[in-house]
Image 1 (cartoon, rainbow, N blue to C red):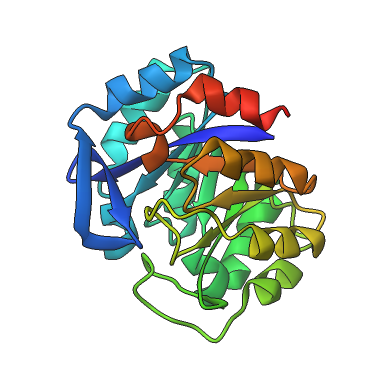
Image 2 (cartoon, helix red, strand yellow):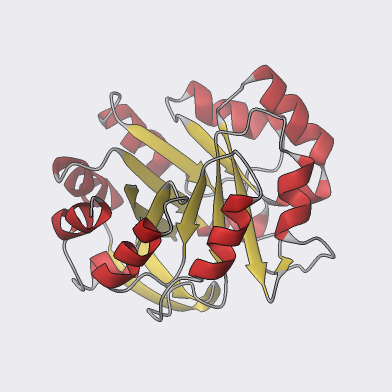
Length: 240
């Protein structure tokens, strides 16, 4: 199982939120480039970046920082989400060396756009499914919907999606453990690789995800920044 370190960008800084609330931030670094360098140096195969300001405003805000990271590490894999709501924005990231773009709001509000992009750029889109109480939320988790995670999975099953990131918003940044049951249930409904996100705070959580034998990766954020465990320890736990 892949262990994916996260960099969340807000006002040009590396932060973590609690339950996606923009006013409940913890600043971990004012130099995201050095943070990216550190994760790659420790052996990260894939870096997960979210433009939090972009997610709320509906357009890229911290994209220049992302471009710098991609430029400095051209041989490394990066996926970016937050504010990617149209074809041009998604394509611009790919042209700047980003391997995959994460799109969630578009999947709900403009699915034809997302399907068209997947057709032109297969395996370059990650479907972001962010849910609260079993219902998908969009626009930086600020807007509700009537869509369930299962609905989205079924709608995009045959559209060359690279992966699905499933986040239980109630767990994100809370250090109380991921929603393993919901993540595993979603993974059983699709052939698309499913990545767990939100709430991982211990090596035991990673081991539990591995035991499910159906989850392809886990995103780790606050736990790594607060030294609950090291990246190397997480890698070891992901192999057991």
